[in-house]
Image (cartoon, rainbow, N blue to C red; front, side, top):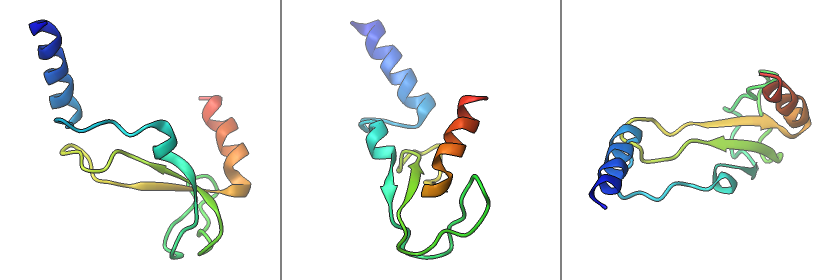
Length: 88
């Protein structure tokens, strides 16, 4: 039991999460409408359109080791982006 606790503590320290539940994939990747035009699609590099549904990819907010950043992909770019990622 102590070893499992030690492993969990090490994992928490390495990932920056202490007593924080991990976000599910459905919470980190979803469709959302940007509220401004300051976001850029990570696939095509063009500005997102305010209020137009797009894919958002989130890291886990609140980590002591990371800054919360949201990555956006136009709805029209999502299939091409997925194909690109699959080919890596």
